[in-house]
Length: 122
Image (cartoon, rainbow, N blue to C red; front, top):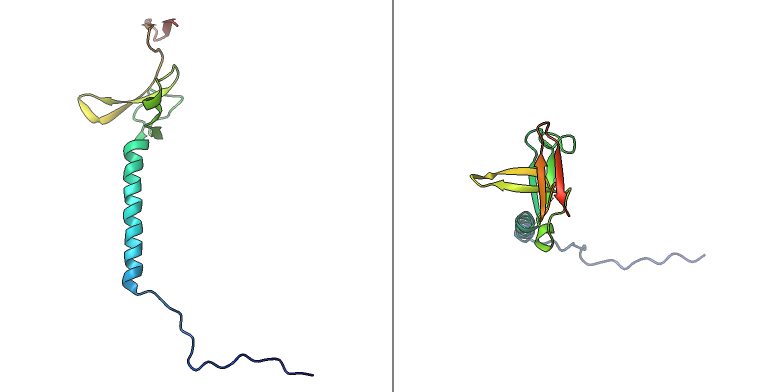
């Protein structure tokens, strides 16, 4: 029976090539910088994170609910009846109002004493 073939012996042991520590740290730091830049771009132009303060939107939205708001929707179209929108308070731009659209352009709204509303128009 023949003997199994053996691999030739190496003169020196095989060493893995490793990158210097500074290159690894630099690559990680570069990845963190790109991730931070992407986060800033997304929160500036695409999404807004906001929290509901108060019971005015119950039962749809509860107090302290967290919302992701799409910032691009109304760049390409108008709000429709029933949409939930966010509005900045003019006197304090850090405050955000969250409200439902009940009427659009060329419609009028009448609010009666018991809080019910009626809408006229198309």
